[in-house]
Amino acid sequence: MQNRGDGLTDKGTISQNSFGFNRREWILGAASGLCVPAALPVMKAKAATAPKGQWISTRKDAVWQDYSSKLEFGEGWHGNVMVKQDEPAQIIDGFGACFNELGWDALQLLPEDARGAILADFFAPASSPAHGLGFTHCRMPIGANDFSRDWYSYNEVPGDFAMANFSIQRDHSTLIPYIKSARTFQPDLNIWASPWSPPSWMKTNGHYAQRPDPKVNDLPAGKAVEEGQTGFITEERYFKAYALYFRKFIEAYHGQGINIDMVMPQNEFNSNQSFPSCVWKPEMLARFTGFLHDEMQPIGIDIFLGTIERGNPQLVQRFMKDEKAKSAVKGLGFQWAGRHAAPFLHYDYPALKIYQTEQECGDGKNDWRFARHTWEMMKDYMRSGCSVYQYWNMALVKDEPSSWGWKQNSLVVIDRQAGTYEFTPDYYMLKHICHFVQQGAQRVNAHSWTGHENALAFVNTDGSEVMVVGNDQPEAMPIEIGIKGGIAKAVLPPNSINTIQM
Image: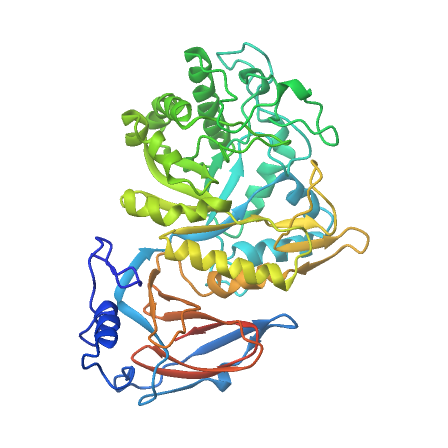
């Protein structure tokens, strides 16, 4: 039974902290005039020998500053926030992003050595001098997504239920070299995949999009498919053919030396978009998942339900009423407003893995304001039990929109004219966790009685402890962190994100 950090255990009962009383007792005692401790408890460290510590800090105009020499360590100070090894949460499987065609095109604008340096930073493990983000879990589309060059699927031949014309030929110049380049630095890269749209001939409106927009697609106004409907033709032969389409994709990529570990049946199954998309009623998506399971199980491919982009848990609960589909899924994938449903569904289905599948994309400004929002999203998802956190676009050309007219953020931006690149504020925000938290680390509670809740804590497989803590105040903030059996004392710069590892 795990403490969730809110005074409740994962079974809903009141937990006690290490001081012998719980938060509810504290509140009720104070309200009723009963005797309570005269002051907040002193979080005293055990006697400790000062370990080697590292402190990295980032703010808007000063990224990745090494303040390790300013970090004090000892005992006897009052701790504001503690790494609580006795309050373990989920195991962290890894971090990553999505392989998109426009990302590969952007990287091709750079000289080979610069392109290699970026990919090494993203994917090289901690043992490498090039280690930056250390991605181990990435995503890719099955066919086109909104950051492809244009629409395509692997089989646009109407009525080809046997998939005789299935082909990944297009990917040989885009996604396949992109993934292989990444695997040069991370050979054990885990990859999962999902479609944004089935082949157009499998859909009720015969088009890749679900919402007309004359600026970016040619879908007639009368052929929109609304949220709450199903845009897929719900006949058994179509379900079987589409499940076979997934299997052909898995096998074709395996033939290229790229293993796909898991699939999700549909990206954002409630969103009717002007770019490749397909809406599904939960019951129909569940029905398809049964057919998908029949093709995936013999080749050892897991299925997660996702991606879930709505904050309504009932959509998933409706899916789970189908017993075959429920037994087929091994995890849940959340993005966008789905993060508001994640903690409830993690509570309802504790045996299922939780992935954050796509960070919100921003508006292409790549500014510090949005990087601070990134930190809020990471805290929400980590506290909801997610074991994998994934960014969206790794690389994009500066100030250029998608093929469907949407400017978005990325981890690195490439200047088309100058042939140069720059890491963005989102890159540094992500790096404050990814660079320090090892694959297989355990998130633990970052416990505070003094309002220092703007933090995440982890214990790595090598025994090192990591505290990521933000200061969202306009002035410097002194803080004392209980870590590695002692107290680390620091003064956090204004409006900063900080990582302390010992």
